[in-house]
Amino acid sequence: MGLESSADTDTIKKAFRREIARYHPDKVIHLGLEFQEMAATRAAELTVAYKTLSDPATRESYDAVLIGIVTPPAEEQAPPPPLRGAAESPAGPASESDHADVQPPAAGHRRFESERADRDNILRRAIAGKVREAVETVFGAVEMPVVRGFDTALVPLAKPRFLGSHPPRVLVKAVDVVDAAAIADAWNAAARTTVHVGKSPVVVLLVGQQLARSRDLDQALEAAARQRKPAEGPPELALVVVNASDWKCHLPAEVPAAVRKLIDQVCK
Image 1 (cartoon, rainbow, N blue to C red):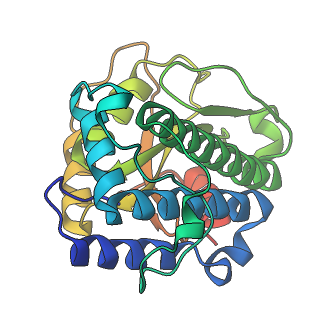
Image 2 (cartoon, one colour):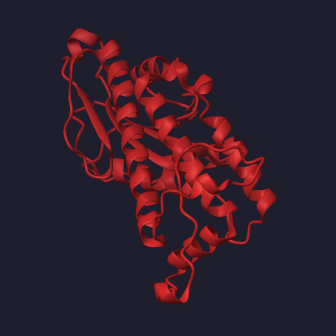
């Protein structure tokens, strides 16, 4: 939930309500089945996190796991209250029936990691599916080579003479937060690829659940564009920031026409 370790009960409750509202079914119904599954997974993860942090005993156990404190033997301490994944309103305390399923702190920590990994995988698959659909709509069939540093690579198979221009090679990377560092990393990785052929431009779709301020994004994109590309790198490289929540795109000032055509399809 993006909280400091010292967050109090009210701060935790406000953060939970803010974050859980982002994944309400009405907010994702237009994004397709995989995004709906991702939202449900995320909502369940947030609920578990809230229940853990709002109960003093489970919060103490969780904090101990994070900082590597060795807890006393079982006979020297009372067992921590259990954790359940069912949704619960933050308005009231948990009842005794909520303590039916006991999990040791280490198992709870592994569960958080597993749920986050599942959520991230669902998100990446959903993003890849949506981008592939857009690329195939504009440029036809694609192949999908493995490109280091990116989740997905899409190479249109159509020849330039049939399209009137060289179709772009599309690289996709999903991150939690798109900021200057994420933009620099993605740009540098794309500049070193050899996925392009001849004059084919390369477009990077950097998809994030949270975005830095527009002004900061503009500055980061301008700084990246000023970097010198390796001789074997793509002749044209454009990086587009995409908001995973609403698929709005943040483009650099100038992009090739073929790239803009694709972005219009991705972010329509």
